Length: 388
Picture 1 (cartoon, rainbow, N blue to C red):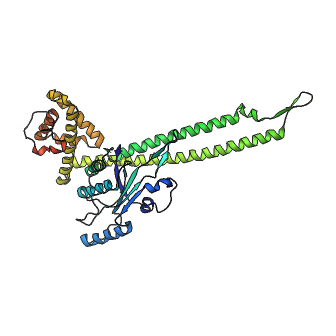
Picture 2: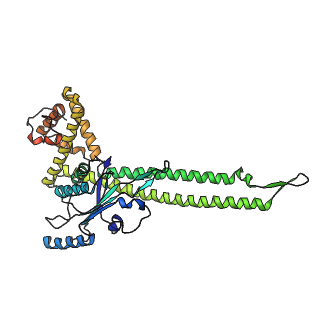
Picture 3: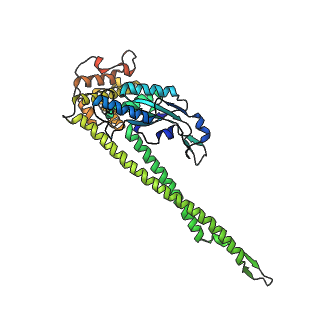
């Protein structure tokens, strides 16, 4: 089962929703007792503390457009505990400076499957966090690789599979919703067209009531026939109105989702642009570039070791085939994690790293160590004549 985490600015009604301070029509009230809650501060109290600390630390007021309180929705399992989420919160604070002060586990949301009529729970937790940098008093500043690391930390702490990275995963989810909504709309429109056809067809002849007089002639019983037509039209009109309302609602949902899609596409484009800037622009701070490149090298090293452990045949390959495999691994990593390919080209300009990575691919882990235990800096450094 995959998990994901995505922080956004906390909404004004976060506490009311998270702690079920009011009722909502999309929850199953009989399951609400399974929810769990924890809080260290109320949002309004934490904002006041942040504003005071910012003034003390930086000498300035917190900017009006700052987002000091952010909230994430985390996909969880049925057996995910509050302790698991506290462990995740501690790790987020240690690694990224994000301090979670509210947690809510929700097990009362979901939907009924239309075909099987089976309840499909939407198991998730809300993490509300303080986004203040304690060193500066201002809001935390994260780079794209930090958000990737956030996904890794979440999957590790919750014992789940890591979902797609950031915006790309959300974009795919939104486009999937659009597809489903459009399918529902198409079904409804077909149903409405069938009803209209039926109204115009011969099936309504069955509503005509006739009787035979004593001479053997058939006559239409006007009163009964009008009554039948009245009932039929009333039912059909009610159904048509209901379906029309549903159609309009679905069209609006599709329109809103398409707007979200465009927003996510822009976010992905901005993310790729930022990543490319970090790699290619000489004016970007060297320390930020080094952090980013180190994270890419670490990700590539893990992927190479994973490939080597699952495919031992690499040890018998010649340099040409190894180079082709390394190129494939880099392309896969680039596509799945929104890493510009220029980052890998930059990495492979260094002969020592080139040799180390090819050695990992062909030789695999040393002394049965796990991938995380084999940092590149501790391997034997030797140049190797391989063009990537």
